[in-house]
Image (tube, rainbow, N blue to C red; front, side, top):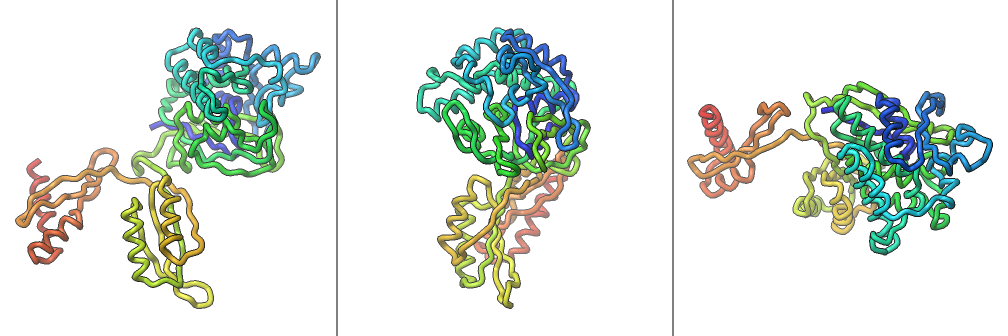
Length: 426
């Protein structure tokens, strides 16, 4: 499987993604033709820049408003006026306000592929829903300000075209992203001075993993956030993959200590040794003043509340004290509830948690008939379909052993014997 992995260590904006796509092999002519097809009086320009000593591609959207910012000077002299670049548009006050329906009509009328149109339309519908929720108005009454400017329309539609080209030419069919550095400080926008991330950005990011690093500035723009949604990215650490292409897209600012870049890795995911990856929350706490029986009870509560697994490990703490480290594995969305359960039911006053990647083989159950009753066999498969492991379900075997007063190991051995015979007959 070919994937596009976005490393958003310095955030993401529309032009950063366009630059990364071009640097990774997407034809600039493809993007330029897409911009022209929109017929909104905008064109693209590409230039090579240097950010923190690294070569990158900067793609600028040029509009009449852009050129009018400072007469007599080219946009190369003032790149910060060209696009979001983690600060408000210098020309926003002069940009026309557009309704969602007007923007969608521009996209539908353009001579573009249906896939590009549908992706772009979805992006603006997401923007409209976010703005409507923020201002508590019907989506039909939303009129875009910053996100409705011509350059943002071009950014979104060209990004959709670039993603389509990457899929067509390099087989990329899945997008994955690192956690997002959203930046910090404040941003001046149509609604005044607001904290970073801006309200629209925050609404669009949803439950995406975010953090703040580097000098205060807006690092994920509303356009960048909606492009991540448009591409339906999954958030995970860099998976096992063979990198085929690398692209660097530049932001407008030169930032000290942290290059203002978006890196795109295009590669073949290693499906030989891995299966589908998903995020898993790991919660840990160390307790040294709690009755072990209570911890056993809490483990049962955690499992009943949806934890995938709970285990306890004896650890040596400071001052010679012996403690118990309780580790909980669960879905990320269950982490807050299970953390509250630990605080409520144990004596701990602090815990730590993190997100990791979980890789699991696909599983299925088959039922076999033993002399004492039915037992489910859990079968794990490699990605190519071969059986990796098979084992009888403990609870099924335990129940039969209890009912018939026979050794548990005897039930388990018999279940596997019957399974082996059944397998041979297939």
